[in-house]
Image (cartoon, rainbow, N blue to C red; front, side):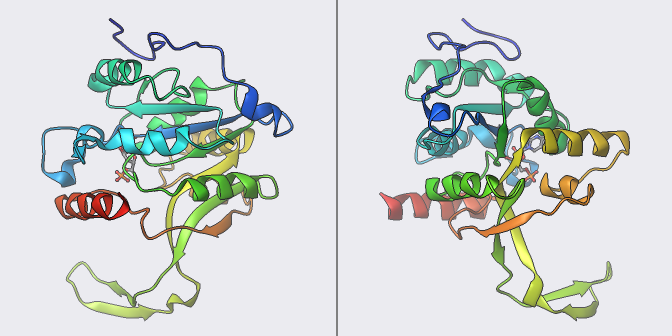
Length: 255
Ligand code: C5P
């Protein structure tokens, strides 16, 4: 039985599937799925990735979306260190996820998890698409569109135009000002990048001890333009118990 960090999945070949790559001028695409959060805001002991959504673990839904994308060659999930064995067994047992060849332990912060993933795929990726494990309703069409845009732009993020009034508020809960929302976008994942660019961005952030809330912000610090593409309202992040209720309802609706 596989245990420990980053083991090969039983019955899965470590040789990367090449067919999709060959159709895209040999660009090899790896999807990194950070799912190592402890989900404290969920108020439960079970890590968020393992919470049930429609009777199966939340992360499973997310991985399936990437499995179905022709432009994605490999999927690398990063899970809490204690959950590596569980997920390795789980994915090995359900043979549907052919693009997941191994499961790795994530780090302390999301940025650490992504960095561990980037290091693990060194020499094996031309482009990388990074997506929160906690966004199980990502439309496959959005994944494909982000990757298509990466051909023109080296850094791409999904986002939605801010639809609500946004105010800056003090710690004492006093409104300081109303922000002009005309140019504000709510950032989602997926975010896709040229591999060498996102690796440099992460390395610089580590050197300078900068911690961002997403990967695109690390590229912005290099002065490299990041392109926004329109995301999806279904692509929300499951963070709180209320989100899980919405997720169950959406699952029923999409059936
Ligand atoms: O914490 P936040 O909600 O921003 O997490 C976004 C994604 O990053 C989630 O899928 C979560 O599991 C993942 N994460 C991670 N490693 C951490 C913290 C969060 O992979 N240490």
